[in-house]
Length: 116
Length: 113
Image (cartoon, rainbow over all chains, first blue to last red; front, side, top):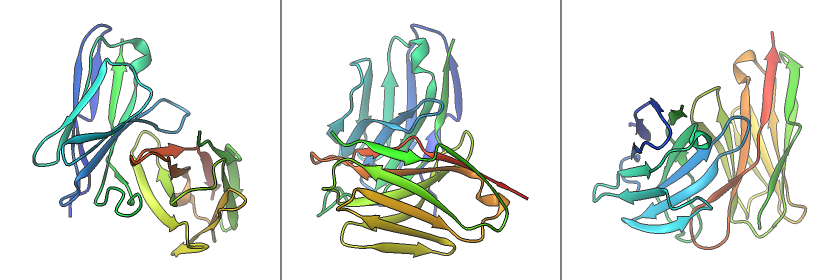
């Protein structure tokens, strides 16, 4: 079975540009979450979507947005890129969303974003 | 606000040694705790999920324990191998209805041949 997939693997952008990252969850998983990981730190939560609805939002500016599609895949968009947005962006999926407790989360390989 | 701390930040051991990685969390009202492995520049691999009702969870040479009351978890790795070299992260779900995970900064493990 395929795990969580993310595209692209690497991306180089310049300040002020916009970027879209994509994620496909494990088949049957309906919950998708996005995390940002800068070097030397643990991942920081950005968004969670379940059944196409936003279920959680982390402490990130409005330049960050996301959506989930009917097939449960998801996109993360970042506008007006800053140097500080350079990071590894991770997508995670899970089957259960608080039924009755948080489910085990499975992560994709990540997208390495470099902002110049 | 939940905070997760992992000690030590880095650990170097000779091959074959048994070792323990530590994770502590400030809010003991957790549903579960998950341990992950991360190779350099790669995504996270789930190692063990331990529910709040469990005291231990085992997978091969790995054993995770959970003590909710003291806000601590340990990951025990038996007979370490060079292939175990990676960063190990622990994470707990935050409160509030989302599946937000709060991570520690990780412990970077190096197993020397």
